[in-house]
Image (cartoon, rainbow, N blue to C red; front, side, top):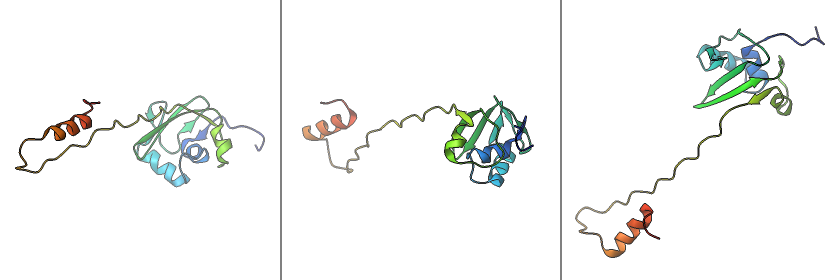
Length: 127
C-alpha cells in the first residue's frame, strides 16, 4: 500500500498532517470539542475526510476554512502541507481606530477655544 493513495483519511490525522494543529492529540481534542467541522457537520476524530471536502477548524477565535486537495497521513513540511489544501479563510478585518475620549477634570469649567479645537481635531471635525 506504499504507492497507493488512500480514498479517505481520519480527520484528526489530516488536520495534524497539514499543520493546522501542533499534535494529533490536540487535533482529536479539537474534534471532540466541536471545533472541527467537515462539510458543515461537527466531526468526530475518526470521521473520514475525502478530496473536495470543506474542513472548518476553529482555534483561538480564528476560524480556518480549507478545502481538501490532497490526502496525507504523515506530517510533512510546511511547503508541502500548503499544497494539500486550498485556504478559503477570509482576510481579517482591520480594527477601526476610535479616538481616545478626552476626560476633563471635574470643576474645570467650560473648555477654552483652544480646548474645543483639540476636541474637534480628536473627533475628526477640524482640519
